[in-house]
Image (cartoon, rainbow over all chains, first blue to last red):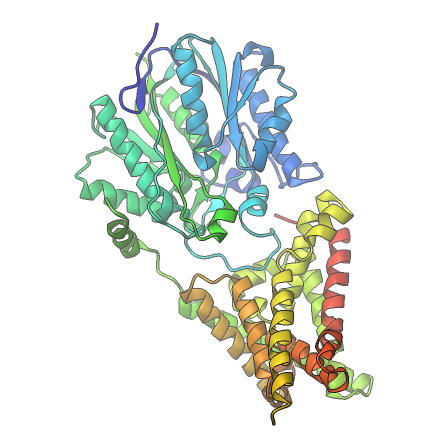
Length: 334
Length: 147
Length: 116
């Protein structure tokens, strides 16, 4: 069986979600969705000697939880797909040596989960493989070290900043029929709207989200009302308001639109504009929305994971921030 | 959609900055640090019977120590988030920059971690101070020959 | 009285820096570097010494005084050693600040662990 891309999207008939594993940091657990996650940690180290090693453990626990729920062993998965924010995809590869199967590392900043799911889905649809796992992890402290400033540095963050979520998420996909399936994926184009402010990711990423949204609707010949809910990954409050304006100005119709970065935390948690990081969209989509779909609350949800593909060196060289948005649609199978 | 049009849309929706509140906090925190410094200056002048010129460096050392400890305890970054310039302008900000970099790199050992990273943020200030002093001092030295 | 002068001046310098931070894209690193250079410049004609006489600790604390100390030490040594005095004297007055910053940063890093 083979299929073609329609524009930048692929419609899928053979990809089902078998199980999901989610792990979360303390702040995420204390948020409104805390009880939906499989495991949480009381601090950023949870017994490890460094933040990086704690991040590896969060991914390991998420994969373990996911395999356990599906009653699978790690060898049962044909291919693992995933990524994180660290250079050299540290958290993923340093755990992958325990998996005994190939690990395809992918990077799309905060859109990594979308990219991983898209790649896994395409190979599953073509029946090249039977079971795949898409996973991601992020840690607030390692992201701050990589992209911004030391954790203890007394800098006053700008009010457009977002807060990198801490946690891990693993999704097991297979061609075996299950209640929720991935019905389509849209791979995003890299979009650069000449945004230079590394403290304002929402503003930089919103055009990419809008571009992928339109591409998805065009490729599948539908409009936003096809979905009960449309979520962007981590545009957060400011980016979400921009996306709403872009959709409105373009006369786009939809039932409900929200952003994972706005859903992950309470208003009184000190997260500025909201959550970000690859695990932000993953925790909300698979920790929470997926469970609501299993209960029948939503039938069709489109998730547009957004990523800012910046490099601190290039930002210092005064180059603008390229962004991308990879989308995937979840549907309850009839 | 072109960049300029997008910028216009985004600028209109930008969250409001709290400039007045931040500036007042900067003033208050900066001023309090100034007052604390004055306290130590007077203290050392009285205890050790030093002139102000000699007590100055000891006051600086005291404040650097306080800032380093507050950084280690995880308090300084919370103060800095409220105070903004009130904490990064005084010498305490320099101490915090050095300590936080060293603390962050601790997991990589003494030499390749702490040693290699301690000047990551503080180095710029020292570099520019020295270069500026050299250039300006040199200019003044040269001009001193003419009058 | 000294306390009030110190409070006002240190607060005032912080306000200027805060306004620059709010209205431009400059980071604290940029702003402190600029202020160090300004501090060095203000000591060109010994103007900063006057500020220290009036505001005491308030003028000694901001990062501008670091530039002033570097400049002061450099210029002082040129009287004795000529142009080489610039390099020889630069750290005379700032030795305390820099040495203690390195020392305490090192020991705090050894003793403490970064928090969330």
